[in-house]
Length: 276
Image 1: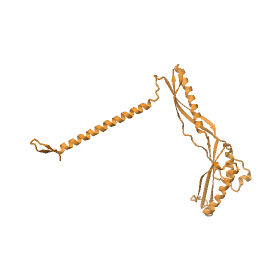
Image 2: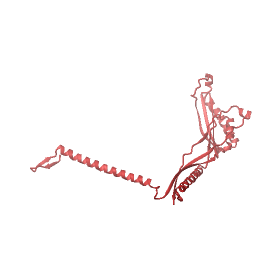
Image 3: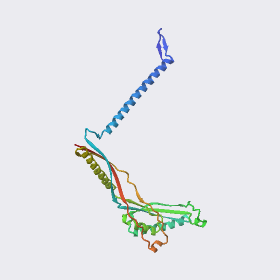
């Protein structure tokens, strides 16, 4: 215990109340100091936000017109990604795999005969497993022949005008789980730039109209920013069921009538023009 001299010169012990008072004062000082730094931090943060918001000032003093405009660019798809695949069943794993192997190779051979380059064919998935999906309408004999299932699929890249022929060739060869086509445009950056240019021209036209109404002269563009949305995938969903035994070829069934989709890209620009 800390001692202090008393009136008689001897040591005098601090009381519990004195000790509590000293600790309380220190705690209050520390609390005040933390509050001061918190306020300073908030002021600095507010100043930074204010400075950022004032990067582009639109007011009477700097004589500007600010416009937000949106537009789009549309082109025909120049790439088709055709999804083809098949599903076979069997009484056991070995038989199912053997049947699946025959169909798999028959489909690839048909695609190559249709003029598809091997590098344009990409595997997506392949799987063999017990068949746990039981149809309540099937008999025990039918169920015994469907104890295992094998699935395999590919995606085939081709010119849009060849999509129908490729799909038809795959289905004739046994691709009974096929049909989806993703329509794409290979130069999406260029298409987005075209959409942004269209939006900027629209912004300039609107700014000119506003300047004419204000009886001032539009001096030129001093700032512009572009916001491009994420491009969606454009699939054509379909499930084509092939007839086994080469029946399609025997009946000379024509390919499906498929037309390529158009690809659309949009852009929004914020433009600031000076006026005189």
